[in-house]
Image (cartoon, rainbow, N blue to C red; front, top):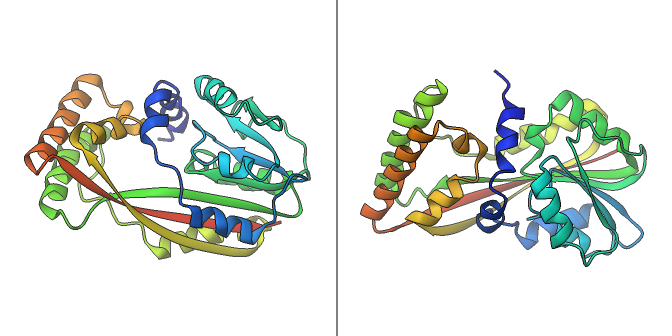
Length: 264
């Protein structure tokens, strides 16, 4: 069942936690984007699914005119306040697939850990139609995974996901697969089917450390976790927190960040 709309609605209920706990993106990723397409004060840029703006400011720093399309009303208000110093920044509240935008008018459209919410057969053609000739689409995302250096804790948490998360959603148990270069290559090739060219992809990595309480806070910014029935969710997250505390009090997360670039 496609429940993207229902899950997407949950983000807007946790804006302050989301802004605090969700990470930004490494400088190397932005350099790769700006090496691919020149953005300056003459450019028009569109961001799809801005959230609380983890990826927004480096683009605003170029002096471009940037429009953020954000579905959540609370997130939209946060964005307007957060970036009010930028005169050429504006926010449109609505789903990307629904909002009316000027075709052939953007030098860059980008989406950070958000484009999976947009149906492929709607999203890519719309991006293509909105870009100027030669304009670029940058899709990037963060793919977190519990560090392989703490296998015992990872196995225990995988078991908790099987007992709570997977049972709640009616899916098979098993460890979350690692995000691979093959997967990034597959995502990068999607726009080729919609008329894009000059396709590139890049991978980046980093590590983050959380206390048990911080990690539970992070999990509560993910729509699929928020949507779990409250009684089940409370017990599930408490057991994750306890597992981390018994394992030394912290958990290491390995992030793989993928960037896909394509040109009209």
